[in-house]
Image 1: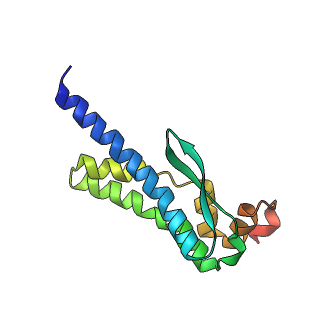
Image 2: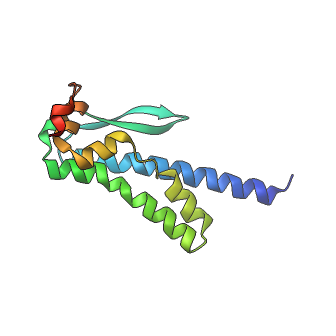
Length: 128
């Protein structure tokens, strides 16, 4: 087998995992900075895949939007990688590109996100 191909695929996989880790790291760091008392709660093959907040109600709505929306940089990174035809840059951006439902909830409705993250149930009335 071609060792150059193995090296290229390995590089792409490592950079994609780094993008995924960076996605979660943005949540973790902004959450801690803004008083959300964050921690990694789920892992996949040793890579953190979820950040939880112990004290989400301590954060202002703007801080929630920043902590949730900070990950929107990854689609931009992936697009830059595609534009400049840089596979490593694209792989890193693609690794962090998965914007979840809760990320979008934090951006669009921080109050409902705080309740949801604290373990409270949310209803349609929370979105009015």
